[in-house]
Image 1 (cartoon, rainbow, N blue to C red):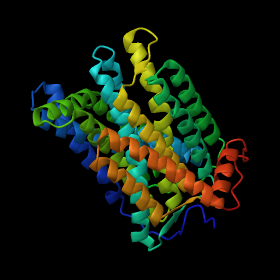
Image 2: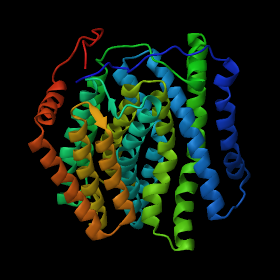
Image 3: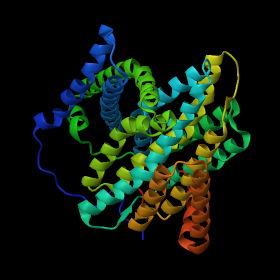
Image 4: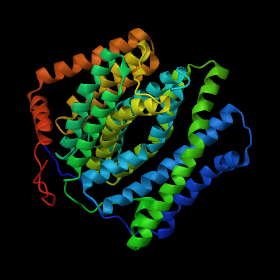
Length: 418
């Protein structure tokens, strides 16, 4: 049964403006040590550099998220969520673009560009979605997290991007053709979400405080946050990436795994925090919708930009090659996306489904071998097929999702239900 779009609503006590603003200076403060290190030219060991630059990126990501949330005051909900998700993952884009750019001069870095992309994608679905179900249970004692039927738009584009992604392991490269396809899917997605309904957002923390300002000051403040966050990311991206690689070599840790999991954790943390706040404000649709939009953004724009960046740095239209491990990682990520799409076609995520997604994700971390990656990819696909064949409602949900992108609801028409 389909539920209300924003879950249970409740009245919040009037907040002290001081406490709304408090996280902002705290987040700015944690970025300052790395800004000082970079501008002063100090040399620090790799572990220290990784810690300081990683924390700076984390702080910048929070500022980007707050600025992006304020955008919801002026555009449709779907487009705003896409913008929030896009801006919030800019730190991850920056790290990935650095690896792709450097790969043009040093082919070893090709390895790391794909590692960061696949790690971020799998974290969102394998850790982020189950985390929201767990937090929803803590908040309401309900074992199922339900979302609005408008989330079918994101799901449909996730399905389209995933279906095309299976071409990449066959080609064993990322070319400019893939850039064109993925960017076309992303543009179609943005165009489709821009036609959605406009609703007044419920903002939290500094975003709420900024939203209460007069429009001119509100926009100026959001622009200032974005500019400073971009400055911090510019200072931190390359040192953070290089420090991770240096730590791997120094401590004998697989650099691929460090780039795949540590770097995305820093950039994904603000998204998880924003989604968790939506859960505790009884807005499960907004919570899961934020992570779903991020997944679509990363699975289209991020993947599509890798070969474009590589070609620009190479001064020629060349393809980004994928070796055996990278091919397996892309295949595993696509297979995970298939299962994520299938389980959410009924517009709800249960405890069992969340545990399944998390269990398969955790299994990959514990057994990072070639054979294990192949086994988990096949497991994702086999479970998806069995799920569809055995459940008529999920089959119907798949059809509805794929049909949704062709059906445009009038901009101001509120939905009648889930």
